[in-house]
Length: 41
Image (tube, rainbow, N blue to C red; front, side, top):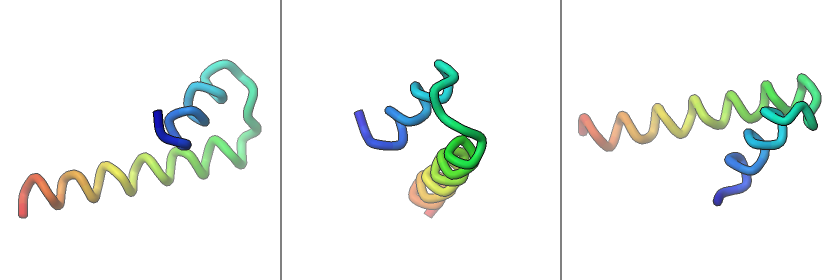
């Protein structure tokens, strides 16, 4: 499991603060964008 996935599980359990949650969500968005670019390239 990658680092950001572990952090997602962490904040899903209420262990992370809002700043970290926002950082994780930004990482997820950026990963999704990269995946979409590969998909539609």
